Length: 103
Image (tube, rainbow, N blue to C red; front, top):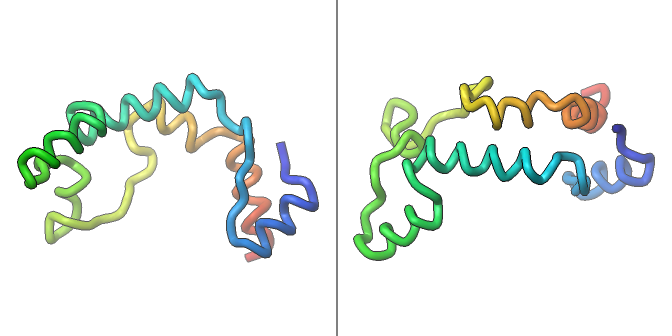
């Protein structure tokens, strides 16, 4: 799947593009569930609920990255197979390359 010329022009003008139906919704739901469990050991909604009650974030891999324990960069592959399959999706990579163009 590649972007149409119109979609590419929108991307070049706006700096982003929404591509509907690029990923299978079941694959996205699976990846989201796996990421939430990996990062928060619970759903993100449950994490936020506890944060609202206590005012303190639970330590988790998201906040414990980098030398300061606050920030860092993502590592790819992530080791979360469901997410890595999305990131390595051929259609996604083709569109990503198309958006980069000759840059």
